[in-house]
Image (cartoon, rainbow over all chains, first blue to last red; front, side, top):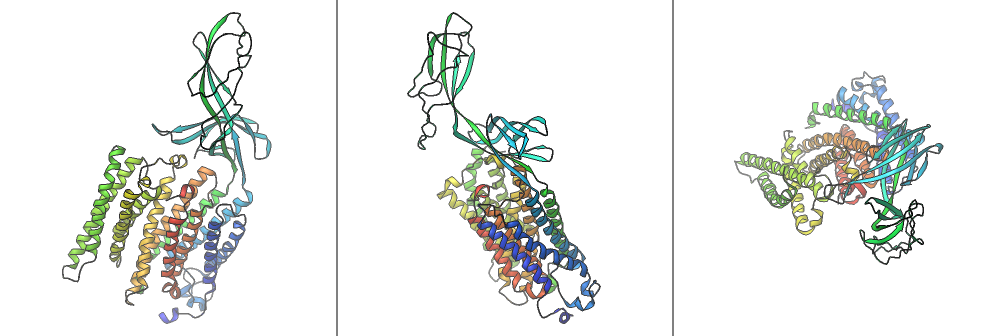
Length: 335
Length: 270
């Protein structure tokens, strides 16, 4: 019996699979080398193992599970040959499913590469950007807010309140990390955030005579871009908006050399626009605020469903293979 | 639950106890040629079980001090791989010919625990609990993706030792060792494939892409391809004796390379 199993010469099917998997391994290596930039030809190259695996799968399917007994579609002369496979009916089905799963995943990758529509948006708080090249669709970043670990300055999540205009419908949504919003067949992901010195604002708090406070934000006139002191910002002067309040007899010009957040900036008798009387107003410097710049990804992609189906087939195939191997003691009959 | 500071303070003494237990296990797994060999090995097994139980408690302490599963950074992944190696050995030691690899499992766990003690003494900043980055903290897939990968690494490690020993020894034991390698490789491949799939799910939820070409995921494809090839060649009489063990060894070398030299971004284990 053992004599009939021995065979001279290479198996065509074996070479198919070997070439396919070696190609996959080489692609992995290529991907590793070029992983810092997405290799554009990777999916084109993926076609080679895909075609080879498909050929192997079809031939394997035709030959049937009982080919060793001469019951396959191909004639009994082939029964001496050993295609790469796992023993038994379960092993046959498992091997087939695993290879099919691999093919489906590769198909999903190709499908995604051809039909995926992806747009990366960098939006500063208060700005609006157009979505996926459609002039009617847009995304407005209304507010961005990080949340923090308990008693810590380390962020544990980012949340953004956005207003989207998609297919002529306005929607308010909160996007956070790992919680994309889905509108139609598009998904919007929040992926990153950054603070830029270009979006720096100075915060002031005006205390009115009757106790109420009004916050103000002004862009600075100058910023020291010194990496040794990243949080120190300088500015020379600013003006309070005349529509809110103006002084008597003229607009105050405040010069500041060095101020810390919370310090008193100004305490003067000023006149409100709708009043003739002078009253005491107090102005505090409250610090600086950077308007966050948030990176969103707007995506239209169905290839994940194909890949997930392929992954499920692959796992099922491997489990069946494991069961088939367990049935024969993982090759214990060789002993 | 322990408060974080107490939990962290207990780690170092527990590591010393663990290194002693794993060391003793190793001694008992390699008995001299005496009549009581079986009794000595059973004592070794009992010590190994005790070590794994204490190791599980140590992982629980780490969970208490960090607030997340111990699966990030060099120290935590080393602790988890060490535990996984001994755990999977104990769970799968019923297989004929597999018990002998208790020495390999205990050696790996012992060496890694010693490395953890060295980190405690000389690289304290690697050991201090850290917060998870926001993208991992909010991901429901983080533990589901990483835990199977580390368990798979442990299984591949044992498969490597079985494949390596199958290259030597008497002719009648070599097939047994290859079958032990295959025995570890199968569940390892299932877990590793599941981990890649779950990583894809995590990546899709975070960035919309189910595959990202970063160094670790790209090299994971290489590992997967090598082991899948090994499993296919295992059924081929001509290649299973020559190619199978070498492919398993190459796969393990790829794992070592992946673990130490492909650390970037969220996949940074160092």
